[in-house]
Image (tube, rainbow, N blue to C red; front, side, top):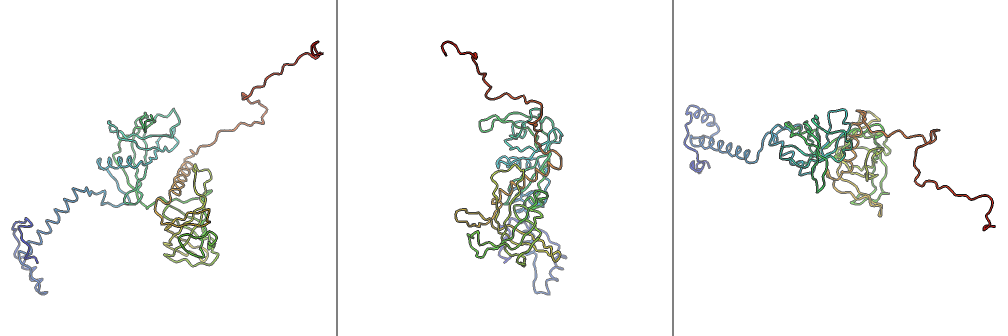
Length: 386
């Protein structure tokens, strides 16, 4: 087939070949009955050269640089053009920045939305939770963390930079307060897991019920579920969880790749969350099952389907799960992370001291309806009244 290829089509000139080296190759292939001539070797080298040139051409056109082909577990991005594209994409996707200021006076993690890169090459981020007028964010070292979706997976970005000052920016026709940030020189992209995983402890510890329906289908009646086992959650994400079985009612044998049903409730406590569903019904696959002792068993589960409760029919409809199916669980995980961070740093907001209304000191309160004095006449009636 190589004899049919015209060298002029490949734009390959005649090239010199070491005859001694070629003869050794020919003797090596002689035993198998396969011999190569000088033309065949020239064609082979030409094909390799052309393939190499095509690869570098594609790499140049599609910018397949080291950040795309690197290890996704952790990337350190230093290319200014690459960093600028990441920032612009976060603006287009309306990512939410978590900004932490390296100053004791700034005791919150501020939730901000990037707006634009202005003419001075400064990143403007809207800050809606800014309340303290004494904080100006002038020349402060800050750390920024945010997440975006890439190739169907959640990626987490972080960088350190400087906040220049606080100003106003027109957003949707309104003047909103915004922080000016320097464009970072280094951005770290972390994806140690597909999703963020937390370990709920203390008042937020969770128990799950492993249940089994008497009949399977797209919609399962609520009364058909029977309790099989109970477990304590060791860690959880929007992709799955690890749990320790604490009670096995039916002496159920759990095997790898089996499908099981879960029911649990999220402990809200004092987390600032609203409209979080009370009950979670999930169909999960057993990724791993480990028996530590005769009483302790560990389950590693992957969420496969999310169940929605229909209150009218008292049934649960299961649909294939995606990372968007667990937005409510994701909000709870983020709120729990902020709560734990505030607990560790001792910056959790506490209520103001309430005055004791039963103290002897009178309260200095202006009544809403002041008392009107009653005008009384003399005790003796007048002539007209008599």
